[in-house]
Each structure stands twice: as structure tokens, then as C-alpha cells.
Length: 124
Image 1: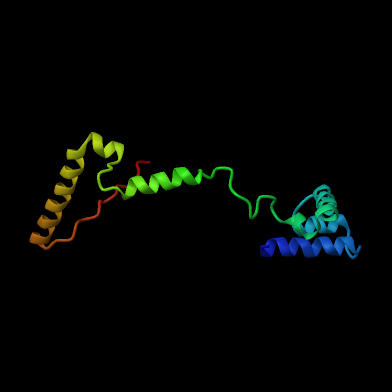
Image 2 (image 1 turned 60 degrees about the horizontal axis):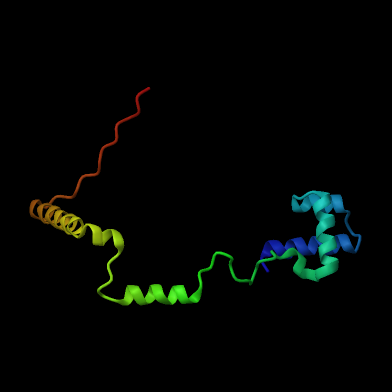
């Protein structure tokens, strides 16, 4: 339970003991008095778990099946597997790598630091 949930629970217990009104609790929690009544109704039915989000501790609806996860791990572990886009243009990645190495060698030979681009002021 988060700190926000505990604070909300404390205020709702105060409302239940009739130490503060539902309107005061709504202002304190920055929610409407109608929502305070709904939370009190949920507390009556579920107890203190009413303030916690309903999906906390449960499995996500977007989770992939374990079999699919195991298959993906197996494919990545195989050295022969190549991502589809890289398989389409294997020489492009190699050219980019060589270009970066050549630029690094040139900068090192010149002992210069690569310059950052100078941005122009926007036209007014």
C-alpha cells in the first residue's frame, strides 16, 4: 500500500468515526463528496483493500504467454539468428560501422574533439 493509499485510508476512517464530514474529506483528498461515499461503500464491502487499485498484485492483461517468451529467448541465444531488418541489408550496418571507425581514427589523428553543432537563433 502506497503512502497516498494510507493517507486516504486514514481520512476515510475519520469519516467513518464521524470526526469529519464527507465534504471535508473530499476537500482534504481532492476528490468529490460523491467519490468519498463510493469509497466508504467499497470499504464496507472489501475493508481496507478498497483504497488500493483493483489490479495491484495481479497479472497484466498485456503480458505475453510464457511459451512465446521462451521461444524469443531461444532465438536470441542462437548465433545464426539475425533480426529481419539486418538480414535485409547486412552491408549497410557494416558500412556505418566502418564510417564511424574512420571518423574516430581521423579525430584521433588530428587530436581534435568533435565539434558540437552551432545552432542559429530562430528568425523573428
